[in-house]
Image 1 (cartoon, rainbow over the protein chains, first blue to last red):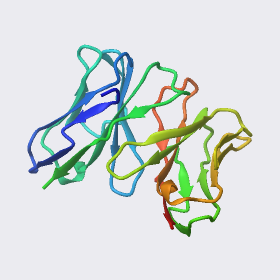
Image 2 (cartoon, rainbow over the protein chains, first blue to last red; image 1 turned 90 degrees about the vertical axis):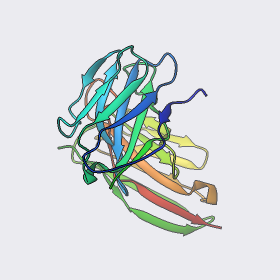
Image 3 (cartoon, rainbow over the protein chains, first blue to last red; image 1 turned 45 degrees about the vertical axis):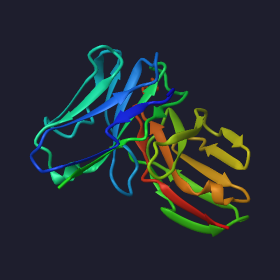
Image 4 (cartoon, rainbow over the protein chains, first blue to last red; image 1 turned 180 degrees about the horizontal axis):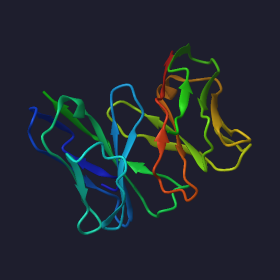
Length: 115
Length: 113
């Protein structure tokens, strides 16, 4: 499809396990963003990439969270030693340029449940 | 910490009624966006406002950016059941529009037929 694709759509894991969430942005979009949305809240910024590099990772809550975008397209959000508080919907968005007075295109999200 | 406060958090109205959702902050934003999100989907952009005092209309939706660029409102005229969803305002606090957005907590709108 032409939109932002996120996999898996749902992930249930146990406390302490490692999780990877994948985002495939719209082809040609140079900027990629990860946000986290808890139940009843608005999305919360985690990290954004311009090309292959993390331009701003100030929203990552702690060092258990890490994200990569090695070839400037697909990105993977990695969470180590998951905790119940990590349960949320993880949203990925992309934009064609760094100047986003235009639009962020969001995927449908990956719902993570940590038991 | 820059925050965006939305009000009301929940709104349940009958088809045909008008409504206004507010998005307020004590901080200045270089631009402000409104998104609509349906269950199981990501937010979809409705509008971006960048100039203080700006008013934009999208069919039955009217968006306004405050003169001081600290607040915004969304007014829906003659609401329809298809307007049901979560409405989110989001502001870019920086001067270079990076896409690092601060979102409000959202307003859940239910329009009953």
